[in-house]
Length: 97
Image (cartoon, rainbow, N blue to C red; front, side, top):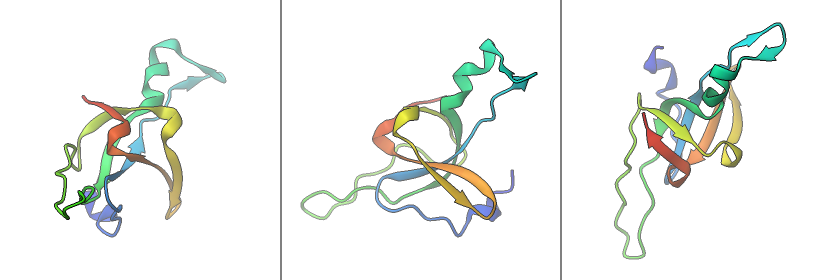
């Protein structure tokens, strides 16, 4: 996936834009071994991090290109240039895979 396409996407604070992995569907049935992919994806864009009360920026732990697993019910959907993305707060990312 060409990252140049996403250069104009810049989330604010500790928000992260994720391109969700596709679920494998056969004959209208989601295959059991692919169910876990509904909360995984690739990090497309990362905010600069939250600011503390004294104005310092908290460093982000994820970076563009990381494959992550996130809390799926806390993601916001975004459609941009005909594609769907998810926006999650970094605190809602469970693990970097």
